[in-house]
Image (cartoon, rainbow, N blue to C red):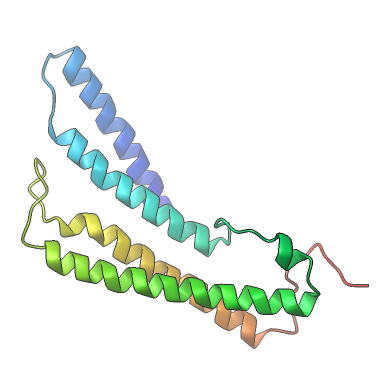
Length: 154
């Protein structure tokens, strides 16, 4: 989350430079738009990975919450492993994209296109680590945790 936040700060500062350059100095720095596209990729993907880590990713829990505690726990473990598998696919596809785009360069920045798809690869790897580890921990400690800590069965 720190890296995504830092990228957001850099994005705001560079757009400030773009506005200053365009309207005050009458000179538009053309590299800002390409850098912004690159930073938005990192902000979005690293933010998504952080959401998986903190268990704040988008989810519909209405039906899960209506189930008995044991079923809720099973569903949560299955979701963790599905997320980890999805992260694995993202990581693998990101590696393929990085290999494909290594020889082409981002305009104005003169860096390999693969730096844009590195965000996808990192996001996938972080999702595999975080969701997979959480799923394994939940399986190993199945009887000790509750799906919703504020919920106690009578």
